[in-house]
Length: 226
Ligand code: ATP
Image (tube, rainbow, N blue to C red; front, side, top):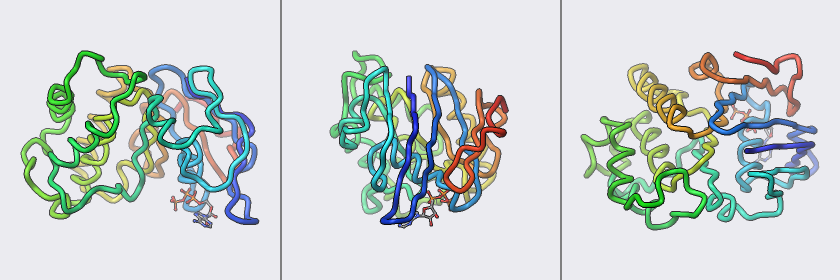
């Protein structure tokens, strides 16, 4: 469903990605590993259309999307959760979710087209009981792990078919790491494809493929089943 060929990206004169090729099939979980500075965030940001200057081919469901702005990619079914979460911290859990529901509900959505925003919210909250218990709480008063769950839940409100996740289990309490992992694996069973950058091997054991990014290049020796 996603095919990337010959992707290069630059911050000014400094090249951050070199001839990256990768593919994510329907319902697949693909993990990108790599050290700090390897280019994982740059890669995900380039795919969703918020990265630095980039060149290369990005096809989504067979359509070239590299010329599309980020909002069009999101409407086509790409959902992104940044490492820094980007929540509305003054707003409550419920408000963060509803803003996403109102902002984006698109024809490429994975979830049932008949689902109302309230039904979608309930379905997503059933994946995250921790959030359900704090619907009125401002995001600013949540732990890092809870905020990470909210960021994921908010993106799910848009009904993505492919999730691009930047270090979803990084720096959060072990109990929430397990909850986050289980929620992501459940989403995978429901048919949501995922491309996940991680350094901590939480999801790589469950991945169809693990790619290793090293100084902006996919290390071909590292490609293969987890
Ligand atoms: P981390 O795990 O630390 O987030 P990463 O694998 O996601 O690392 P990137 O953040 O994509 O790596 O960084 C790739 C390269 O691009 C690094 O050399 C980094 O210094 C550089 N870089 C990242 N963001 C910028 C920026 N805004 N301006 C200039 N260079 C940048």
